[in-house]
Amino acid sequence: MSIQTRRERERAERERLIVTTARELAETEGWEAVTTRRLAAEIEYSQPVLYSHFKGKEAIMAAVAVQGCADLAAELRQARAAAPGVREAVAGTYTSFARRRPALYDAMFTHLVPLPFATEEAPAPLREAFGQLLAGVEPIASGGEDPGLLTETFWAALHGLATLMRSGRLPEHTHETRLALLIGHFTGG
Image (cartoon, rainbow, N blue to C red):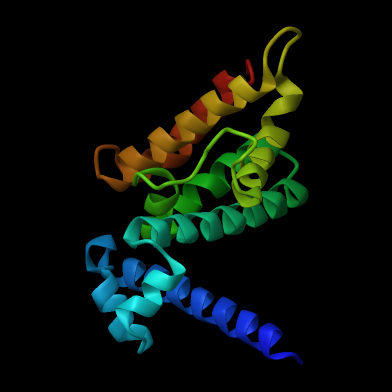
């Protein structure tokens, strides 16, 4: 193994450590606890080492968001493959993800992060997560309807439900009923 290859591998490992530590810290203590100083102490590297990988907290949060989108895409893909009611499975999986991983979900969809969404420049995991939503919605698009816009509307409804329930503005005990209403009306049922 060349020295260059070893250095690249070590750099990638440090970057993974930074992202994983930020994600774990955010999940246990919230994003307010994630600072470059705290991360440097947690991973036992200096702040300049952190800055050699990321420009700051927003860039770290963006890396966490990309990783989260890959996780969400995998869960949505598995739900679509395993369930007969595709939109129901997608809706349930999406809102469950938001409830189980609140800090990760916030990095992905509520905090302002320097990521290009809804463009060709978007990282592959973001496009894949959206693609999994699209695959669940596309079959119900009527002639002339844009499946992408229909998917964005479905996603917005799921995001709204997840966000309002997490904040306590919608009671959790009626969540399944709300999802059934959304699916029923969304599919014309």
